[in-house]
Length: 148
Image 1 (cartoon, rainbow, N blue to C red):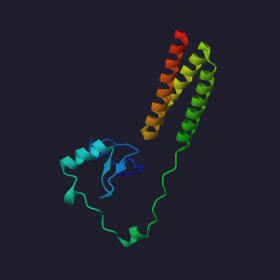
Image 2 (image 1 turned 45 degrees about the vertical axis):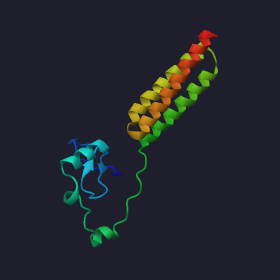
Image 3 (image 1 turned 60 degrees about the vertical axis):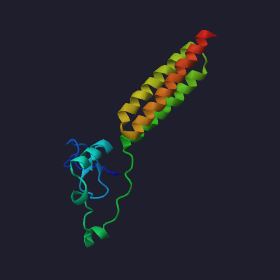
């Protein structure tokens, strides 16, 4: 599947959801899906064989330029930059090696994790996982400080 930004008129063939970031079937270029699970569900329902054929190439479409890879939106860029700032600030606070520093880093990493949710998609999932791992490491370090 090719990830593309879909117009509002497109609907997921698997679940019927309308979304701005549906993925288009790379074979027939006419079916749209939310994710791999919806594509598999549609194949089970009959989106295969004669129902999924590549479109005929016309002279007009053959001459059309291939769209450039989509650029991140300004909102995504701002959220990503903010995420990086929070992670850096959390790391700096964690290096203070004091309880106050550890608590400050916990707050920074929690906010970074929430930004991962706002980003959404694969980038958001990656950001959330990274922030959650840093948060877990901070809690472990806090436990080691108490034990010492």
